[in-house]
Image (cartoon, rainbow, N blue to C red):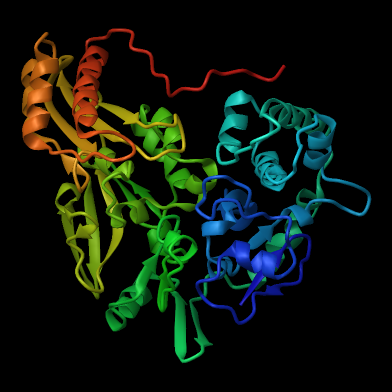
Amino acid sequence: MSILLNQSFIPTELGAINPNTTVLDWLRGNQLVGTKEGCASGDCGACTAVVGELVTINEENLIQYKSINTCIALAYTLIGKHLITVEGLSEADGLHPVQKAMITENGSQCGFCTPGFVMSLFALYHNEKSVDLTKINDALSGNLCRCTGYKPIISAAFMVFKEKEQGQLDFYERNQSKFVEALNSLGNSKSINLSYTHGKKTLLFDAPSNVNDLSQLLSDHPSANILAAGTDLNLEITQSMNEFSHIVSVNRVSELKQIIENDSEIEIGAAVSYEEAKSVLIKYWSDLDSFLQRFASLPIKNWATIGGNIANASPIGDMAPVLIALESKLKLRKGASTRIIALEDFFISYKKTVLEPSEFIESIVIPRPANEDQLITHKISKRYEDDISAVCMAINVKRKDSLPFSVKIGMGGMSGIPQRAVELEKVFIDKWDKEELLAAAYEALSQEFTPFSDVRATSEFRLNVSAGLVKKSSLILQGYPVEDLAHYSEHKTK
């Protein structure tokens, strides 16, 4: 099973490896040690590399590059793709423009984090024609530096785009047609079936290419571990040192990677990444733009899937409360049969769902909003961005003649599951513009939820801050100028 690696047009064999091997471990095991291991959990960005995938835009085959955390991506999930590491940037006649800019602007000190920053800037270089501070911050959102500070790195980003305006192309731009041809030859649409013998154990990896094969495979192997991106599941490998005996990857299933819009709803395939879904989501719910900025770093959003976040059933998964508030439904499949359920009914208890053996999420179906509908989202966390929520709240308000007549509220971090706040909805619709809303909201929350206390927040804090968010939402609805701190200030390049 092969990938394209760096500047070579000749496929590179991954070899006979354990299916639990991460991309980072494979790289370092093959002496590509520029990619560093820092946290092994997708938080620090020292392991950042870039993946290129074929896409069709206006009937033209192109390669789309995106930054990912190699510490939590499995090597076999890159089969048929183009992997670029820091070793693949320079050419015989010198360094890549991104590397030159980092040197000129003194963007490195100890150097441990530098390869990750360089690769994030490399992805930005290929995805944008011009930049501002917002785009740079987004591109670097998954990279942490402990000694240099970010100002010289940001300066390097501005510098490289000033030079790009002169029209010089790097190796990958000059040779894109050759890489397209090479990727086409890898046959990325084919299903994958691999086995690896380790002592007395045989470990399996399957990656079907269509939903019928996926359904049959899971029917034959109901105990297999379903893997979308694995940004959470793979922590079992990197943090808990566990090993999965049978991994079924869904990231090649074409039907699960589609977004379909019609007059009444949007259907998002379970294997669609957050970054791929972003444009359609903010087209209908503009408030989600700032919310998704805080949800995770760009390398995580490039790789993580909406279906995976839901199936994970974490009580602090940020997207589930939003989708609950939007009255979303799940299309579940088992064998040849499908069923539709409301997302709010999907979660049973902590990490437990209604999924039956061999059943999987095929898509998420979201009703399109009416003209006067408004979605308000809140995320409370210790760190402003790229952090787990202490409380997540989404309020979907339906209005007629500018007055609320219906509301749906989804909550995260308030119980063992993402949950709809039914009693709070009644209070909100009755008292949304009244002074007693804050006290009534606290009372309703206290009756409906028994929040836990942990390192992120106490139970009482969660109740109080949630009541405060309800009051803040009412002020937004009444037209008060409530500042949305989630928006980056825009600084355009000169």
